[in-house]
Image 1: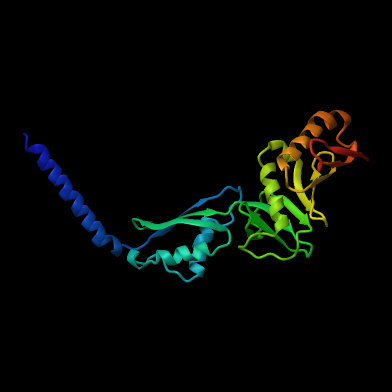
Image 2: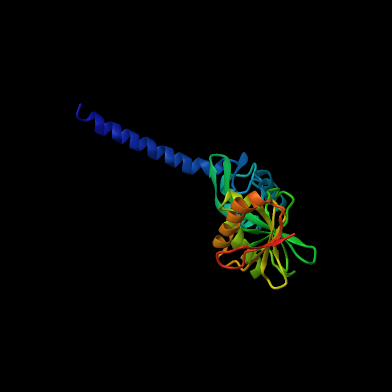
Length: 250
């Protein structure tokens, strides 16, 4: 009986080796039956769907379905997808049996920017310019005013837009801020102005410096002041000064 376990181990090892050899020999001869794409996104909208990936591959003239596994150039597909402005990262492209698995992550789009010249584009959470697409239906922060007309897809957004992005990241961290502030306007002095959803006040915000403190002060005014006096009492709130808000009546 003492020889049984060693023999079993040897048989299992031999079986595993045989299976690996067979997989190595016959797997490359198998032909791809389908593409299965897995998409990761922080947005509700999907700017590049698995169906879009299939279309990108087909339009690029890359043959996959029906082709021998060993003949499919996975690197070519990775290069193609990385060139797409909406895709942040191609996590992997490999075969699982006769299925080609593509795993990719989309850029998290945060801002919708409108230029003085009438053009518009998106900006992701890293400050990179992303071209407009009607597939993006999320309720994004709008940025307009003195943003300039010069921008380049795939590159960092202009400085004023970067400041707006920094402020937006603070706003997104609080449910009250998100509901109240939906638009950032850059005036001629490159100072930030906000428009409140409740009350419609113009808010002079100034620079993005001390943004968290300014937003907290505004929140206090709305919750403990205007909620009693009436949200339509004031036409303008000035948050540019430390630890105080100056209100101008209508």
